[in-house]
Length: 295
Image (tube, rainbow, N blue to C red):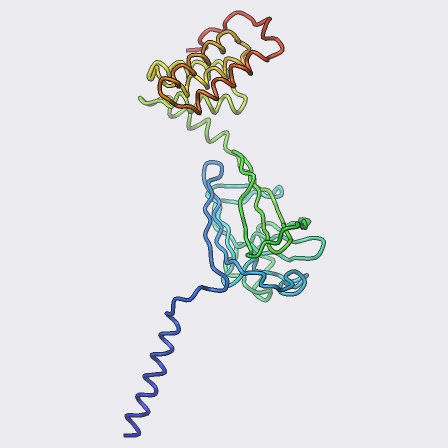
């Protein structure tokens, strides 16, 4: 009887232990994965989000001068889908640990090859990929839950922001995309279905051959004469070439086509572009039409 009772107690203890392990309660520091498109690839962050909960964070919960996992629970990681540059250091495509050493007036930010650093004793300087100092900024509004975000995203640069309580630390990440895109454009232009409009937009936005961009937009319109979004981009290119009469005519065509298609947003954008064309200082002295560009 004692043997049976003892066995029952053991089994009951195991049952309650297993139940506790699988009980679906909210974690105190929930984990998050953020994957942000950047350049021609992405930046991915994986970390946990502790809360302030009325505590003094920096200088207490997070001691000054010591390695911090920069989050809670598991190590914080950052992954780059392509080569990037941080503080003048090239960082190869791949996954890295993101750790910091907070201080009152400056933080050390470390990108490390080690994906498992959760404590100061785990940190090995020889695994550093880049280590640099940044100045923290104080903000008025308290951020209750720790957060790392990718902000101010541009084609070739973005800002990583680490925020908690009333402190923000930020650093820039840059990437080189022009050579890759130019190679891709050259390759795609040799295929049957050529991305004329997309290539033209890239040329326009990156200060390349506008006459070639104009020629590509003309080709795009040959394939789709009612593509008012292409017309609008063509008008922008013509305006930049100072072919104002052509630009105005194309913008008017874009507006009329957008109206027929009931696309109010493009109607509005075409109207704004028409006003912008007319407001150019040398509009009244516009040169002869620029033509259709290179073939």
